[in-house]
Length: 176
Image 1 (cartoon, helix red, strand yellow):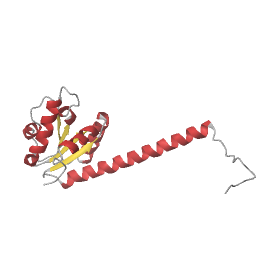
Image 2 (cartoon, rainbow, N blue to C red; image 1 turned 90 degrees about the vertical axis):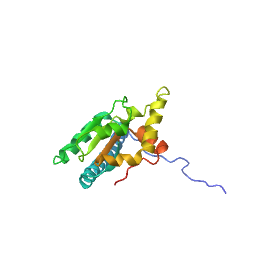
Image 3 (cartoon, helix red, strand yellow; image 1 turned 30 degrees about the horizontal axis):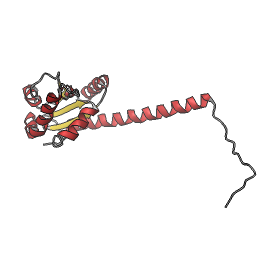
Image 4 (cartoon, one colour; image 1 turned 60 degrees about the vertical axis):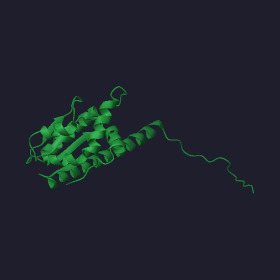
């Protein structure tokens, strides 16, 4: 069956360059607004979780790829939880045991923010043993983390979160 039309070509208006640029900018602004809105929602959830778990163990993963953003968000949490002391640990990758280092940090039962977990999970082949040791510790000593008796906030980039989810499957956020 063939179809014939009087107008073989449909004409549509072509957007000007300025209209295209304006549309792209609007899309980027909408996307950025959605990301900021989601970030604010997640930040409120983190703050509420820390309030609810005050003085009790909780394992909290916070995925954030950008170090400057981590610092900014940490500052916002501190401002919102000004009634609580927050402690920080910055890992260098030289630590023998994550858990042993965490247990040495004073200030329990106040929340402990841990930065640099990715330093214990290096991606290079030369440091494969370091990565495997850390993943093994997370998997095998997972119940011993409860000894911390405080909220433990592990800041990490997405690849570290993915790696833990794939290779230390039993080490996941739980509350006690």
